[in-house]
Length: 325
Image (cartoon, rainbow, N blue to C red; front, side, top):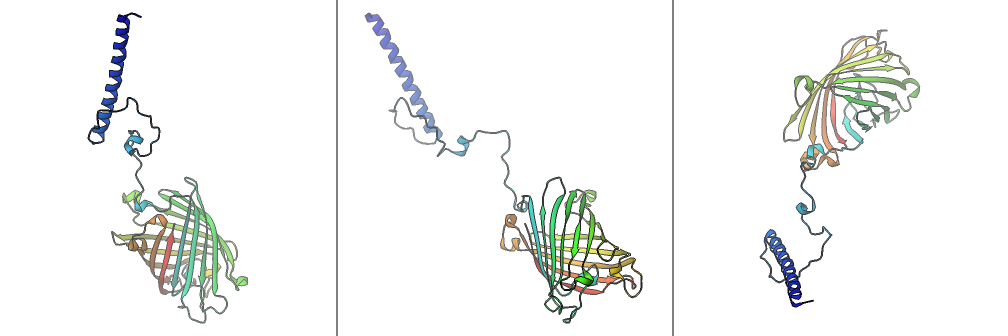
């Protein structure tokens, strides 16, 4: 190789070294400027190792920009059990036990003896399909001379929200321990509710009307019908709400409601009630993601309509605790 060729080759290597050096220097200056740091010394290695780990990288550098908004975290009022299984439990003490306008048991302690009531329901959310559920109601009275467990009422059925229609149907088994021979029976029922917020264009239902029908096929072989309305009055930012309700019952050939005469068809009773609720989640600033806890107070006036049909007139109520998840 001649002198001229060696000179051109040396110039080429020198130019390549200058380009590599300049690129490394520019990269270091840009990185220092982006981090807000003072540029480092101009002396640096020509090559830097390639790091594949994202540890220590910022969220902006690790995740590319997207045209879609990131998912928002659930609000506190939306945090109540978004899963497929739901559980509700009411525990209450009432001074009387009236069911469909009738005081079922008048024991030695008097009809005003305190009653412990447990009402639980386990339901399964199947999306757009009907939601199956099982439930049990128990009434306990320590003053009963026959059995403290006066009534055990298991049931099963389906709830179906076809907004604005709310449909429920199912089966109830009435069990009276130590009184089986004269009281136990079974019935099937259906309930149709209507969400009237779609008509009045309100955030919450206004009257929530419903109709309910049951057929006793076990012992009494008759029908019980009920229609009712209710409205909830929440007091914003206090945790309090008040629900007013009213219903009326009608029976058809229902021997259970037969009074002094043979008549067992007609309007049987009506109820006027108030339910006061106070959120313990609000009191203790406790998220509903772990369940909703409420204190409740009950006050109801029941009165018979037809003297020939069995019904009791009473002002009754009490207090309790409810849990929903």
